[in-house]
Image (cartoon, rainbow, N blue to C red):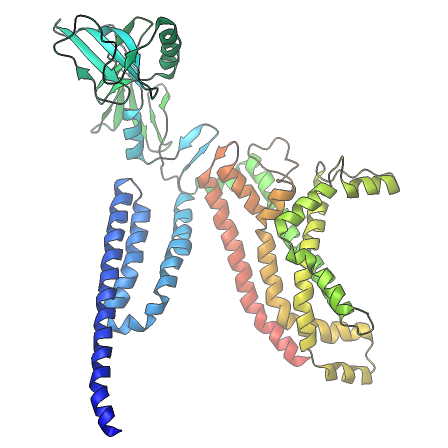
Length: 538
C-alpha cells in the first residue's frame, strides 16, 4: 500500500501542477482579452465625446487587474463581477445624474442642448447648410437612376477657368470627371440610366424639396430648378481662435455664448442645435423660484408621500386583518381560502391594473355602471382628481394586501402562544392583547418590510402610468404634470415626455427623490433597533 502511494503521489502532484499552470495561463489570457476590449471601448468613448463612460470602463477594467496582481486582494476575486456591475449600474448612474443636474442637457420645447460643444461645431459644419451665390458655377444636368432607386446627376458646364467639364455625381459618392466627354449622354453609365421627362420632373421636385446633395465631401452639387444645378458653397465656417461661426451668406458672426449654450449673433439670432453648458444650481432654483413649476411639484410631492403612506397603512391593515382571521381554526377550508386570497399577488401586476382600469371605465366599466344602477351615482374615476386618487389607492390595496397577509401570517405564527395565555390570565381583553402584544411583536418582524413597502410605493411608476397616466392634468402648468402623478412619473414625463426631454431638470428632481429615499432608509436602520427593544420589553 505504501509502495502504491509512493508511485501515485508524484503523478498527482504533477497533474495538480499542470492544472495550476493551465488555470494561470487561462487567467492571463482572459485578462489580456478583457483589457484589449476595454481599451477599444475607452478609445471609442473618448473619441466620440463621452469621456465619462470611458473613465467608467477604465475603472471597471482596473478592478480585475488590481485583484489579480496584488496578492493581498486575491481572496476577494469572487467579488470582482459584483464590484464591476455595481460600478457600472449603480455608481456611474449616480455620478452621471448628479453631473447632469448641473447642466442644461435636454431637448425641451425647441431648446436643444443634447450635444457637447465640439459635437455641435462638427454638426453645424457638416449639416446641409449650403448656399448658392451669384458667382456659383452652374451646370446643365440630366437626372439618372439605377435599379436600386439611387439617383445621380450627369452634369455639363464649365469650371471657373471656362474649361468645358462633364461630371457624373451620384448621391453619397464622389463625383467623377468624364474625360474625354462623349458627344451624347450615355443610355447606361455604371448601372444608371436617364429618367424620362415625366419621371424626372416628379423626382426633381422631391429631391429639391429635401435638399439632396449629389457627390461627396467638398465636391457636392444641388438642384436649382428643372434645368440647372450648381456647386453650393459652405455657409457657416468655424473660426476656432474667435470661437465663432461666420455666415458666408450674410457676413454675420455667431459667437459662442457659454451661458445659454448657443452660438449667437449680436442681434440675438442663434444657430441650432445648442450645446451643453454648466449652469450651476439653476435646475434646483427653478424648483423654488418658478411658480409654474413650484405649484405642480409641491402638489405632486405631497400626493407622493400621502400615496405611499396610505398604501402601506391600508395594505398592512387589510393584510393583518385577513391573517388574523385565517389563524382562527374555526374557519373551514382555511388553506383553500388563503390560496384564493393570494391570487392578486400571483397575477402579474400590469394585468391586474388593466383589468381594474376596464372595470372603472367611466362609460362601460362594470363597477362604474354597477354603482350607477344601484345608487344612481356616476363616479368620474379618471376625470376628477380626487376620485382618480381613490381609484389608485383602491387598486394598490388589491395588489398589495396579499403580500402583507403572507408576511403577517408568518410573523403571527412566530409569536409564542404562552404570552397570550399569560395575558388572558391577567385579564387582558382581545383588543388589549392586540395593541400590547401582537402589534409590538409584529412590528419587530414586519417593521423593516413596511418601510421597504413605503419606498417601493414612493417610486411605484407602473401603477400610475398604466392606470391613470398621471391624469387629470394640472390646468395652466408649463410642464407635463398630472394630479395623480407621483415624483417618479413626473420626472419620467420631464425626461421622456411628448413636449421634449429636459434631462437636467429631471436629474435634479431624481436626486431629490434619491435623498428622500436615503433618509427613509436611514430611518429604517435607526428605528429597527428601537422596535427590537420594544419587542424585548413586551
